Image (tube, rainbow, N blue to C red; front, side):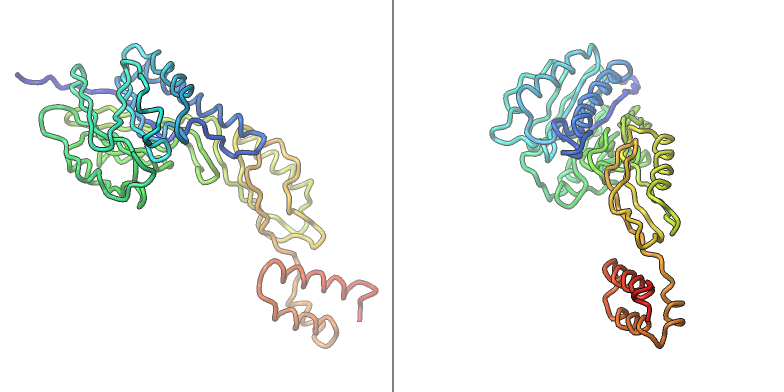
Length: 357
């Protein structure tokens, strides 16, 4: 009997980290905590509207889930009328001997591949088998996914996986395809990477979790058949960490800098989180060490400006007086901000009316 060709629609996510408070202690941390739950709600609705499978490739939770959190997540999954959910635990929410995962009664639409060795679930109506296993410890240094092979039996075979660095199941990206998987849905690496040629993707975290998670975040929509795998990245995040590098001139004032930054933030969006770096030269008495009042959220502020003084010209003009002697001695100091300040304040003292030689 010939099996009819079928294309299944998959929504692939991971690393939601429910329970986390990104930028903890900052005024927007509570809002970012809520955004993680909201993005899960969004993806469950998207799965209901357009997918056969919702795959969650580990780290659904930021740490061991509480019973009430599992109940909340399960209530969301129970709203699905036709899409099925398959999930595994990652290194952050690994299945420990006391984990709430062990005896939690999931909804009928949910398949949790809880074992620490290869497990799978087969959906006959989709002619699709999903393979995977959950972390039972926070680190796994062996390339376990290289050893899992899909049988050539006319089924669509999906690998649901979590890893990709030295401490968390090192991955050779070419192996899942060579091991006959039609799609390998990975979690753990927070930056999205789609490799349609290898039938593999790291979906990335759907919301940014810290300052290193720059760029757009979201999830993957995959259409998979026995002969073809098509992948598309779907943006989903409500906020992004946006690096801003600002060039400062000696005549730049704090008021002028604040006005320029405010315009940029308003143009890009006030919901985002800005990582601001100042470069260039400033006047000696101008202080950019702390951020001025701004309408947007400043996640980090890094003043790398230098005090503006033409030292070479000063050396030429004062090679035989007290200032020239001071500059010669100051040259023996190690390079850095402290040296710049010592020289700048020393020059200012020598050139004032009272300090002029």
